[in-house]
Image 1 (cartoon, helix red, strand yellow):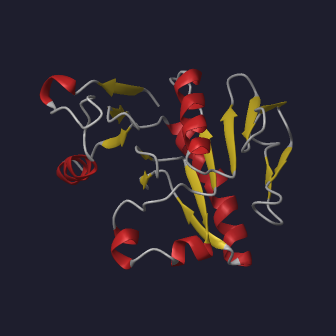
Image 2: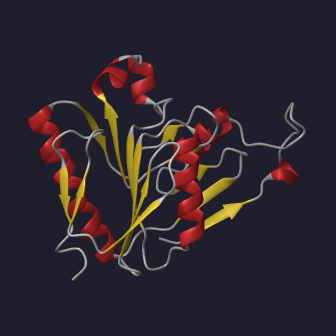
Amino acid sequence: MTTFTIDLSPILQQSSSAHPVLTEDQFERLCAANPEIKLERTSTGELVIMSPTGGETGKDNAEIAADFVIWNRRTKLGVVFDSSTCFRLPHGGDRSPDVAWVEQSRWDALTLEQKRRFPPLCPDFVLELLAPSDNLSPIQAKMQEYLNNGLRLGWLLNPQDQQVEIYRPEQAVEILQAPETLSGEPILPGFTLNLDWFWK
């Protein structure tokens, strides 16, 4: 999925930090007015426009998301979200992971209005799937942004290089070469993602 970052500083007012930003309210109104476009907002207020995924990436993402949904229905430990869900991160920015999971008590702590809008929290777990048209470095930066906002576990799947990058708080990124499985322990108790099919 190709992404484009747009600098809106020429048309935005200066914030208290002297940097022009797209505010939360402006971003939410922009998304509501353009529901057919997938948008994100960086922590510095830049607008990110994401193109639709191709067939292979969409198929793979659906297969992977289904495993999380099946596990979560069985365990009832939290809530699984698809790639169209936008989270309002605590330190700024609005991001949409390919797959996200939030522990049940954190989700239950939100008001109904917060649940209906962009949930104001960072997921406990996120998965990002690198598409053939993606550049790796912006996705890696996005994973670090999740960590800076409280992420407990993150997986970046890179089918082109047949690698998985594992992100955990206060730890170096772990890189695995074409692993057959990934364990979600202890954040996702009892969850194992089978990737044997993914690398073929």
